[in-house]
Image (cartoon, rainbow, N blue to C red; front, side, top):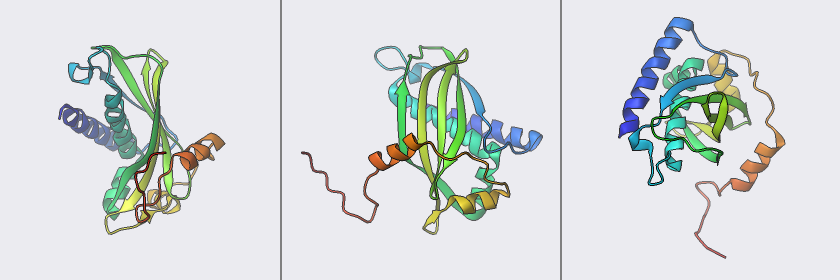
Length: 186
């Protein structure tokens, strides 16, 4: 429940920045400053590994709002879901430690956009997460990225995806939702 307050504050701040400064380019790096709270800490007295994903969501909300994607989604009854994510931990965030969540769109394929999120302290990366997010219609169906950029009224200036990301997606994918996916162990 405590991330709700951070979420509301992040959304309000991003909307104010959008109104004051206008939309930022899709390739921009979004930054939000946070502090590790007691509710973020695990038994080892550092940031719980599961909390990073929730706090990186804040960076995603900030970026979606400030690029204008959030409003384009709302106007068309679209929503975003995370399809894949992977996280790498380098250093631990300690109680009360200040850090910055940096978020950036790093590319796309025909069905999803890819974002990178980092927890950064004094310019040093402590943790990094790659996210593959798909845009869906509330009425059903996938929004392709060509339609997404058209809705933004902006050119698609994101770079091609690196080969390792394409390999990661292929290796980490599960069967489609309408296909069988039995839980069997070798």
